[in-house]
Image 1 (tube, helix red, strand yellow):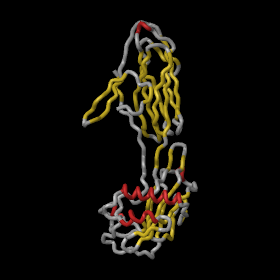
Image 2 (image 1 turned 180 degrees about the vertical axis):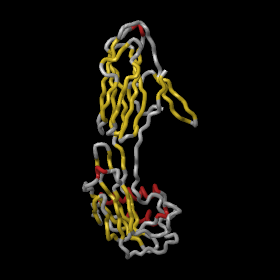
Image 3 (image 1 turned 90 degrees about the horizontal axis):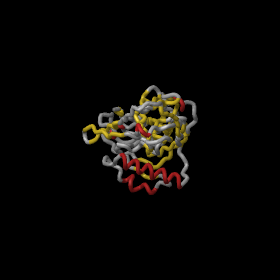
Image 4 (image 1 turned 135 degrees about the vertical axis):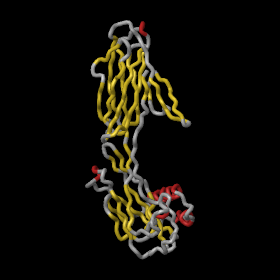
Length: 321
């Protein structure tokens, strides 16, 4: 009996540091100096070496003016945001800010509103007036990832006390934001052919161990099976494996009375938005000793471990418990 190890996919996300959970209240920081100019730095994290040297435009659109007490007046073209901006308070949630950002982005697009400033990712936008800004960056695709900025609102100046009660209660006129990383995915298809079938032995089950590594870490691990009741070809499809991962598929059990033809283990890299197909073949090897096997698929639910016995994994693997 083979035990199936839990599979997992790791996705690393670095959020755009914006107004999520930000409270536009002056706290004890005093009035805003509306005449003071601000800066915004768009950082590239050190691990994103493939972005270094690329020109990736970042556009800032001024959505509203701000007075010394943190009250907003929408800029031209964004007048429909007047009501939600007037209701901004310590009770304004991250979802509220997200909704306003989406509305501002829609107004910017439909009104073809011009950016107040455009710089490249990794640079600093300087001499910006105080107020509320919409930040937009087009997604940047590499072979394995999509570097994506969700449209967000940035307040100039900022006050980190709204996100962290232990932060210094002071207005920040030099603001910094960082990028968001979303892994791209590809698919894996394992095709298994049984050349000859011995009816006397009954159904034959083949078991595969699948391991995927990327950047020195394990990003996928699973055990799958396919059962034959006659000769032919069957396939197992796994739809979401991180692009760039090197996948190794090993047939760890070929079925009693059967033998693998060719290599029992194959490795290849997963390509984004494509399907990697690996082919395996077995044939009847003689003998009369039969056998069967079960792959136990373990899952955690309601504070306890459970399992589902599985003798066949063909078809789509996503969505199983």
